[in-house]
Image (cartoon, rainbow, N blue to C red; front, side):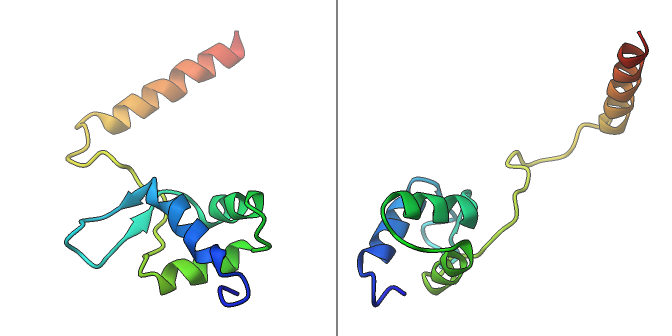
Length: 97
């Protein structure tokens, strides 16, 4: 696809450049944008491309396709479960009222 549409890779790299993640010294790169979002951005720029093709192109460029995850690292709050139980309890009481 990139052979028949030479601007495709250039435009894809521009889209992911804004949200590129990873250690600049490392070969592992990833983006916080989904392949569906990137495919939509490429279609807005006039490319006829589907998300499956975008995934293949990203892999060929050295990107690892990662699922969304928490961006804040570190230990979880010790009362995290208690916090969520309290939220459920409060919302259940609101629904009854």
